[in-house]
Image (cartoon, rainbow, N blue to C red; front, top):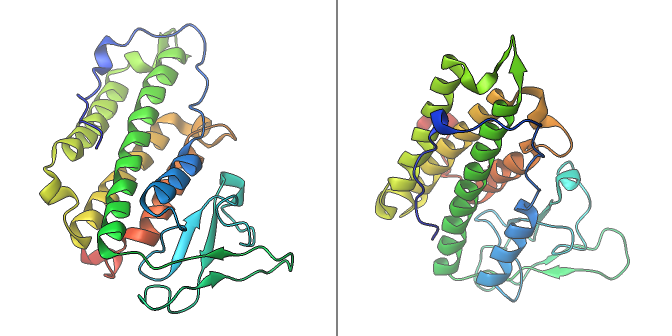
Length: 232
């Protein structure tokens, strides 16, 4: 597990003279690696039998709304979560390609869920650093956006919230379904606040919004507690 990082010192960042490039997209590849590392025989299904992975990992899956971000979502047979079932993603294009989705042991499913949270935290640390660089390079009224007290306060608050998640003992952060869902929702909130600070730049083709969206969707699919949104 990635060791916790200290919260960013927003006041000590030296502004860049040019706008930095957006962080390279890597979430889809990292998600595939997590699937393969924990389940070499096939992607890990969610409790509902859905699978989120790249088109390379799910070659028979039809492209959907997330394909432009590098992943597809497949719904295996209804018995995907049943130990006796070995569902196969259907072949909608008729070219003979299919992906067998084998139910995994509970320990593997839990390790995958924890791995998703680790990926989400790693992504947020990268987006936080990108946000600091971006705001340090943008100027308005003769000063950088990062130099503004209100912006610094907002960044510090976001960094503290992320550091609090990092510092939460694993027994409280990801020990069961409810804990993992709470952690996921906290991370989603951090990501959305970082996008607000980035403004429109975060939603450019090469901006971090795509990977943040993937992390949110993957967590919603694999980590959902079964409760309604307002139930905690």
